[in-house]
Length: 266
Image 1 (cartoon, rainbow, N blue to C red):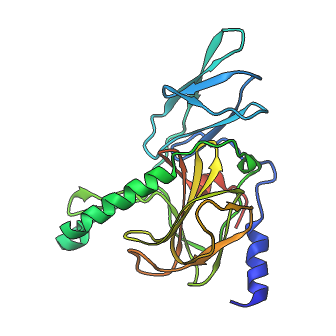
Image 2 (cartoon, rainbow, N blue to C red):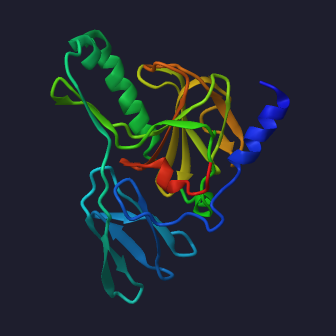
Image 3 (spheres, helix red, strand yellow):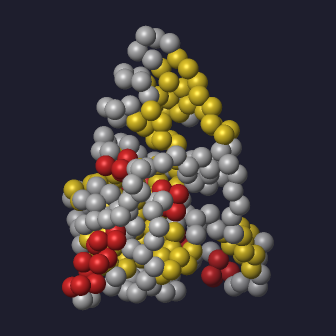
């Protein structure tokens, strides 16, 4: 990589939505709310972290119900329930037939490894910290051709496969990857079965970003990182057919669409 190229990538990775993080009321999106000082917010039977300035977020999974609600408990003992209507969306579904079984289901000998790694990833997304830089908006970790979108799914021989929960950006191996916002590195692994070189960053309030198929990781677990900091390099590790960055977001166990959280243009 040329030094000039590295600086260019770092510069455009720092670009964020000037108005900050915005609500996207659709499956895969988020709601950015504002509670009164001292209020508690409960969503889906769980209390949600509220920042000192009253801001909080709710995340909606790929197949979320279109009618949502949360309750705010005020300091005077009163409460109010707020209702949200999500806009429906369609996903790209591909139906494939005549696929050999070995390409649809992993061999039994690797299933234990897959389960262990899945638990490792789940544990990385447990923390709920008070970091809030992400409210200013997220930058792009890399920029390039979008080769895969959130929510897409393949049906193999009539059996639905796991939906794709990331945004795939096709760029060459070795392209630097920048952190889209401040955070704490919760997981670093250079060889997960499906995702290969993987980094998970905790941005606070249960919001996590993930970077998959990396050829190189440049940070360590537990490290505090800053928006725009280079955290690794794009690769083709894990179960992939070519070099790209698979970029993902979670709000705890809810899988979000990166394209909705990053509203500035490429």
